[in-house]
Length: 312
Length: 276
Image (cartoon, rainbow over all chains, first blue to last red; front, side, top):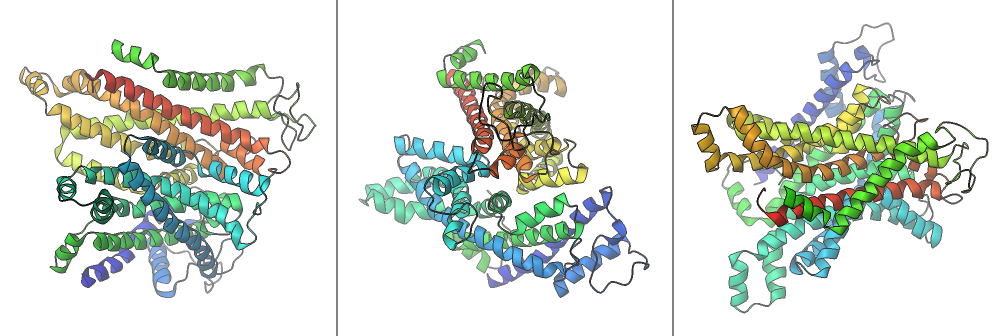
């Protein structure tokens, strides 16, 4: 099993390289991009030096990123991108990390509750709320929270200044993520509750609470964790909007600025970091899968080369 | 079909949602024609409160806000409508092809669809917009492409189910060509399903369109769009909060109506059984 995960972690590198190649190809089609010098480095020779070919550039970029952790220079400020990206990624990961925890802590209980009260008012309420919150754009929710907590009640500042002010952006992301997790958990739990083992456990005299929490939940968690990557991707997308709304200097804000100023190297760096985060995330999904599903653990320890994806 | 229609029109929630949507669309397309201002026209008085002359006041440059909301709605709603429609047509075609032809075509195309749906739709729309040139409305295609996977999956599984049934086999045995079978039997059975999905997909397209407008990669500044209007109103939250609340409320209202409409269509189709 450890061998399997070592392989999965090593596979991150080729998959990130594939994403970089894809972006390089797309960028070279883009009108107005200097394809000979898409990324410039601090130790580059003078302007008069001939440009590199497409493949040379790609190879150099991958080598620099994976060996030296060097993303080149920022197109506008001419400072090394690595420091900037490291700082920005830290900010974004802090937001998304806390909100994905809150997402699961909020979403799983709500989904279980809805499944257990199927057809009653709790179910209707939770189902309509989850549909509502996963449909509206996140800035609408952010606006509602800001209007209520910052403008009306004046509990927090409109723009984050103290740690307590971070609660609004965090809860915006968490509510949207929790809506999706609750949806999946509800479906999974409802399916589990129809299975014959639930009936047999109930007929053996176990209380409904123990059937649901000790035996049902374990099975319902599998679909909930299988959407981990999807929900994380959604939170990363949501953080673009939330960072812009609350002016948080994270990866999303950097990306928006890079797009509007056509900063190729910055955009490439951001995309590489996002690809890296998503690949790590899919490894985490696999780990969570093994944690909640013992039968997979057995398959893996018998050295099977089975590859399973963290998607439904 | 007649029965379906009757049960749809007896559903008060779905009818209300449809009427609200039609009212919003009519307002957006007619108001800029009868308004005495253009959406870009600066009238001189900045941040006016609502008055008979300016029903929703003016924005920070002194432009009539009601006209801007209506004109922005035109753009947002047309993008949502057309990208939802393109996604529906292309997705349904791919789904029928994969479900009916099967084999290696099916597995290759469906893997591509899987890959497409693993990229978050917002990022896909941003990237396509950036590649194809910003501010020229190309993001519509980005949103449409992002909306294809659910259609393709839904229609494919329905097609698989139908093409396994006995009457398709017998019509094939009678010598019907594949195109004829698809046109006469498959499409008719699949279309109601796609009709339910199309409202959801339009609501999603509306969300992505406003988010793109909000982060400033959708449409160039002088042209209003609900997300962009929200963005410019957000800076003045304390003094004139209606500049941000009205676009947000319009977006939420449209999305809720689209969902309720979809629910109404689904209920009317499932209550009669038969077709689906």
